[in-house]
Image (cartoon, rainbow, N blue to C red; front, side, top):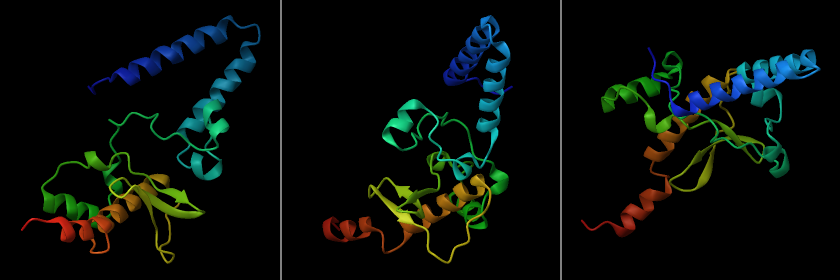
Length: 167
């Protein structure tokens, strides 16, 4: 049986509380319809492609999606690994991609991009790359792009290494 995280316990308790509140409400049919709509939106893998992705009131106020609201213990679907990522994991002798779990394909100035924390900037996807229709496949592509960029000679940390290395 899978380990239940504190976040999952909190989510279950919150859902149970919402269900109880909706049952007490005079307009329980409207509340049930709202809850069904929320469940459907959460399951839609292309939610951020089809909508603005601004779900909470705070996101609407600031005009951008807050990505760190999710359980980082959720692992990506390894059946969707790109051949490069599969070979990378095999070469590194890793069983998982823990450090890449929260890497997702985003958009910078209207272009598909992935955020590189090492340089605190966006790495844009080359124009010729066709993006998959599925968000999970897009995220795998983003992980691959990030690794390739970090290993390339064009990465800014390469220049820092050359300038400041001791030996």
